[in-house]
Length: 245
Image (cartoon, rainbow, N blue to C red):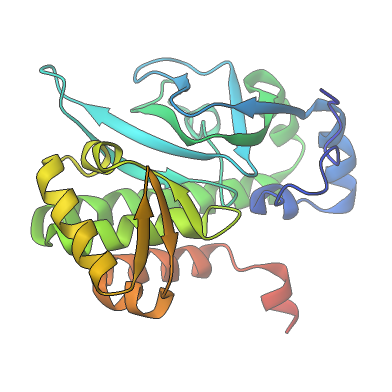
């Protein structure tokens, strides 16, 4: 697969890489490699030091935490809005959670030592990545609050919105079992919540594929956690077109 950053024009751009200034983009482009990511693929285990950082373009990745007895829950969702491997530039090196591909697609990857070297020469780019790390931390914190206080219906609506925001279209590949694992709840609860959303004309679910029919009503069904995370991300990482408006 061609290593050049502009290899696949049909794939949504990664928002962090889009923040690179022209001269930075020229330095980064030869180092970035397009890679396909498959659903279920583990990019990094908890406690490991990643060899690469990944900037998803059409893939969606879940940051997962697990218990000793096999339980798991999703801490955050990363798509074309961010990157996998913030520990590389935060100083800790080891990943605090596992990174598992939820939706297969493309990503641009960069060797971890190369990222460190590139950032030594660019304070503005480092500042962008640090702001992203703050936005990701806000998402993790809000997810913890949501899982503790909000209903399964609200949690599922929030998670679906996060997934749709990071997907190339209005269809998600997600089974009830997947959603239960991500939210750390029983499958039966997810099935009942999804049925209520479908009966309300909000989504259409069939054979592990969820299509969004009414975004406004899906946002109404979600708790305030979704809007809070979106607002914080927009504050820390406003898009250039929004700044120019």
